[in-house]
Image (cartoon, rainbow, N blue to C red; front, side, top):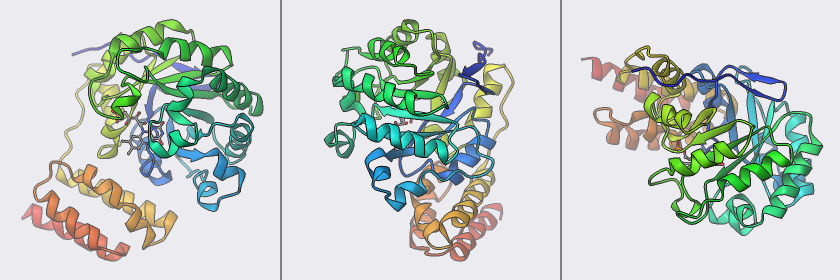
Amino acid sequence: MKHEALPHISLGRLKLKNGLWLAPMAGITNGPFRLLCSRGGAGLVVTEMVSADSLRYGNRKSMRMLDITPGERPVAVQIFGADPQAMALAAKLAEEAGADVIDINAGCPVKKVLRSGAGSALMKRPGLLADIVAAVVGAVKVPVTVKTRVGLKTGTVLGPELARLAEGEGAAAVVIHGRYAEAFHTGPVDLDAVAATAAAVKIPVIGNGGVKDAATAGAMLEAGCAGAAVGRAAVGNPFVFSEIESGLAGRPARERGPEDAINLFLEFLELNCGVYGPENGVVRARKLIGYCLKGLQGAAALRGAFMEKKNLNDAKALLVEYLHSSRR
Ligand SMILES: Cc1cc2nc3c(=O)[nH]c(=O)nc-3n(C[C@H](O)[C@H](O)[C@H](O)COP(=O)(O)O)c2cc1C
């Protein structure tokens, strides 16, 4: 079935090949994973959220989160915080580290983030959010985007007002998660609220929430969005972006089997160990394995066995053995 075509998107002078973005995911969208998504057809990949306060104090772990892997461009660094000056400094550091775009987190409902007054807490304080967007836009030359939610409580729509605010302060695009903050990451997406947000501004609005294929991405385009941001559907399948693009153009996507899933995870593992070392890289890959093995025969046992592995060689041997036994 042919859906609405993907429009071309520009963020300031930055032209994107498409409007299919990788949504930021803490603990998941690190450099190696973003590289796979770029190769898998994403028009823009986004880092995990990075704390502006931690960057201000030179926290090494947060500074490392600004590392960009060759080949993953264009890439946005997402920052969170509640202090305009700290956010401006964080944006500058991210720009110096090579970010093509700075994304402001104004939608995260996680307690730790809310306690600092950041993330979706900013939706309650539009004046402060406006100051943050203005400070960040003023601090960097690269385009600035804002990721927020359609609202805090179900049915009370704030998206259009927040998008207008972001546009008014110079943001180049808005990513709108169609779920209310109180719903975290589950439940239905309010497409009417997404459509109202897209209609409220001239800058591109990227729809997010439950996008996993051409039909769900097409629904965001029909709601007036210029593109869609994919979160969890990309975790087990970084090729989801090119599959969506093909589907929207009416072309069938290539079928992917268990071998593709294992090979992809092996590739991720190698890349991850290249960045974090042969032991830490394996430990850090644990968060992804459940997504990558979803639907495979014996996935639970394989996942359990992987959790025991402490270095790259042992982890690879386990996955290769699974591949061989699944061919028998
Ligand atoms: C594990 C996980 C971590 C996330 N971390 C972030 C984050 O760092 N910043 C952010 O703005 N959103 C974060 N999100 C929200 C996603 O960007 C996205 O809005 C949400 O998952 C809905 O998209 P989806 O239905 O395609 O997964 C996270 C979501 C998940 C599941």
